[in-house]
Length: 145
Image (cartoon, rainbow, N blue to C red; front, side, top):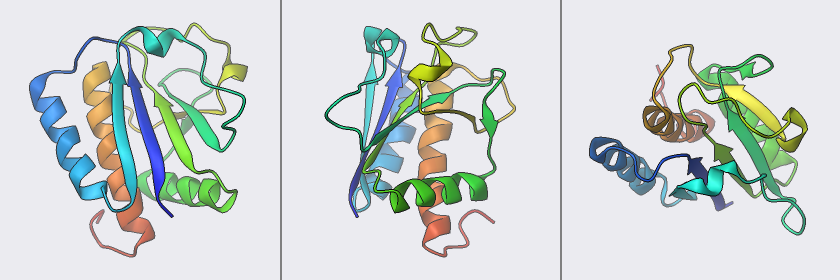
């Protein structure tokens, strides 16, 4: 199944080396999904609702109430979503230190992929790598070991 993965960022543009890293993961994932990165003020809007309910809106956060996931748990979480006919993911990354301006109910889920406090653009690169890693785990690859 081919799916859409969107990463929504708060600033105008990530640093060049971050864009290069994300581009590499986009290339690696191209047969599995369409990985897109959007940046600017769009992240402040409420996650899209309505006609496209098969997209799971996920806040990437280190705040209270965020679900911690290892790489294996993230892969299993993606597989479970795909089993429920989710056709895409919209990952929302707030600016470093920013509290999301939408209530928790606005998101389908809030997750944390690392305990390390990082800048928003580095979080996007980590997320791109984790999406790639998840599909390698689901495909039986030893990449994550």
